[in-house]
Length: 379
Image 1 (cartoon, rainbow, N blue to C red):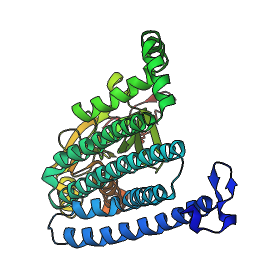
Image 2: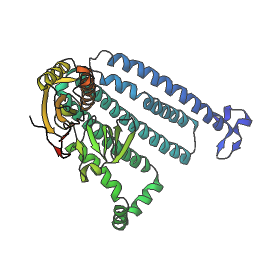
Image 3: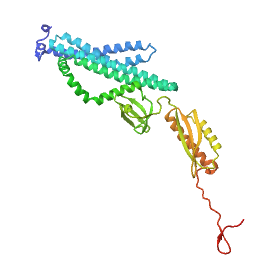
Image 4: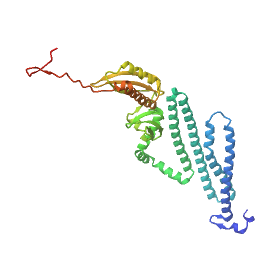
């Protein structure tokens, strides 16, 4: 080929001839364009296939692997075109290593994205089950938690595997790796002491996914804060507090210290409303009004509604109202609503006569006898 080219293209520039440098740039551009074209054709063919299947997860996978496939096709086509330039063996060997490393990275990237796509599909299905069938709420949350945590664990393992395979493509790394293996005993002990907290948090995240003391969506009280489990990571848990703040809690905290889980087995909860009323309140009428209001409450799940006189004091009677709701949010709304409506009833019934009052009894004044001494009046 050199003899058919003009003389100026056969001039040496570094380790390559001038025409090889021009060819190198053209092959890079052509390989990129050809690779993206092949990836686009493959995407359309895959889309036609997955569109005919009834399951949704293959559509998610087809969308997730599009970018990794484009990268893989661009790398492979560029390398195949560069091999036609009659490059030096050492340069071609380096390009081969870089191509293999890039191809391995693309494959691992595609696997991780596919894994997350499947996990997202399963989480969406479980969310639909929560909405459609409240009786399966606990089971659906359990599945979501296991799928999300397992996906993250597997993705970390895939990343480590990909990093190791990429590193093994280079002889320098292999040499260093053999040296590290020779001193693995001392290095392993030192690494274990240095990373024991990180490894403990990682193992705690895996243990939480298996034993499931908490699940995504659970209502808990931790660090004296009430909130909902929003996300469970490998090293920390995100709790969405009632005022929309996020509390970041290390995962070992849920294995080492007690906390309250309000929706561990049954999401239905009981709550109380305490009211102070006057002694002269008609208890039967008050109970009838309470039951009437409860029948109109959309947050009441129909399980429990009970009214009891639990204490008496010098000025008022304490009445405890026991109510039930399907979840903590609904229970809070039910309690504040029934408290407000009963207070309004107490204010309006007989012009507030049943509200707590302070009574003052004034004794009849004593009369003075004719001799000037104080005495009582004879009947």
